[in-house]
Image (cartoon, rainbow, N blue to C red; front, side, top):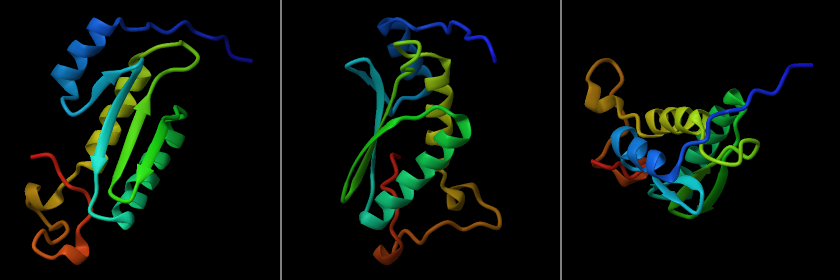
Length: 127
């Protein structure tokens, strides 16, 4: 059996500073770091939920998720540590990188979804 390691819990002020510097679309509210991803439809919502689910399961750190037709809200907090830890920031960054990835803006072989055709709309990106 492995030993439990006490994780550093960040103060609200530290969380706010890290979010501002590293995750500007995330916010601290009621002890959770949160991000609302706006989508174009239920299809996009399900794709975001599945992406977050995959990343969380791979990381073994599980968020709370709220969803509706055109949005997904992700909430992270380390239940064991009773606060926000590096695990939350690390998973939030990975979720941000993957869900907000826009290959068409990078150039290269992957063109990304056509922005001019609503049939292929997915996430409403924060530009």
